[in-house]
Length: 358
Length: 254
Image (cartoon, rainbow over all chains, first blue to last red):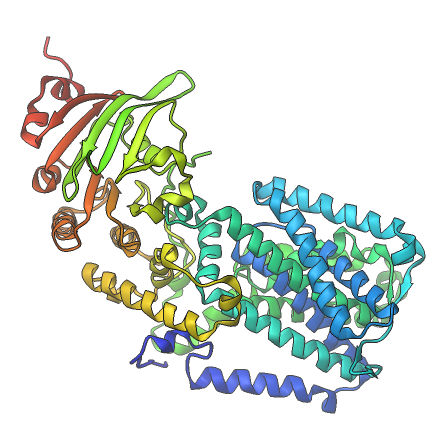
């Protein structure tokens, strides 16, 4: 068990709290950066997909995990980011223009959704965001001159300083760098007043107001940041797919994102990555496993959603805090080994809430 | 003009007049207690002061500000902090995070500075932390600093809610039943703290309370509310022996 000796409040502001953190996260980043040396092209491609999922999940986590606003429409922000990026690249701009524009346009989309959405909550918000995503999907289908409509649209490769990124490992490293920056930005928000205000709005809107937090403003901020990050993920998704059709950005993608952050552990940054890895590995695993099975089973339509569904239901039933929650339990079991109490994480009786005001 | 002035305040929910033409004034630096049977409208008065409800009629004035011109989110900035009867803590955050949310009104850093976590944000955070630690020292919460709220016992949560309100550094503190759910020792402790808050932190306190010994111990003036109306106002001995108050609690002697 590690006991930290704190001598300075600054220690609590550090992202890496102790040597163990520095070592393990450093090692993780080192491994991620050296992965192209070890893995071949196919697996690097799969890893890129996981990173893109993680980036999109990070965006969704900001609004759903930390601010408590359920969004069923995040595929729309992916779509906006993907098409904006593809369009700017097609016009001959470099990725230095296309990527920020993807984030910016997605951000504006987020702002447009957030202003009415900040007045809603729960199921109504879910329906409103779902409607937004359907509108965007339809729009992409009909805006032939920009998106190529339902026929689809080819995506040019990313371009930096006149250099075109063709190799899959180059794209992988590019995504990794942006993902690390986005993660750091989210971690920064979480350790500053805005992040605490987001958590306050999530846990009790009433008392957050009594403490001077403007829930409306916080929700709009969360939506905007979330949309920007998701838009970036969309831009990279376009590169990964290399061909865009509006059907990619349907309701299923939104649900898959939501599934990912719930499986990983709602309300934690770790959860995003666990969820992304799980979904990525599952998809790859299912497609490999399908080939191994006899066609009469492996070729059945709907086997993928079935497996996803079973896993989701079991996680919600047996470990509502997700993979990260389970990991925290295992870790504290090891830390406290002989004296660990099984009831440590037993949920306490929740006390009566103040009569809700609306 | 008094520090906090409430004039002819009324609100009704459907056909029920929850607060009916209530007026009272609180002097700066005093402890003012509101008592009354359950459902008398005491918490409703607090919710009106917090601007969660829109009153039907009446005036709310605090230190020269008309509260009715402001929204719920602006009240804390004026220097009014409150606790809730049934606790409204941020359950999935640590004690420290909860208290730091109390510093929100003192935040002056722009969003992009927070995004980059610049030097000025670090400085501001350290300053908030120092203030929070003062409150932690004051209420003896050091032991719980890094624990998550949802695992803490009720009495401790009650203290944390008080601590969070103190982190605002308010001029006026509204306490909704500070002693409910506490055992006799904890109630006595709460009494000492209310005294200290008034004397050392120079805050004005308005509390809703059922524990008459606590009311007698800390309050300068007492207001009794029965069925949304003012039944009596004065010092606690006067209010406790007022016939309307007695009949509200014990019924009329036939």
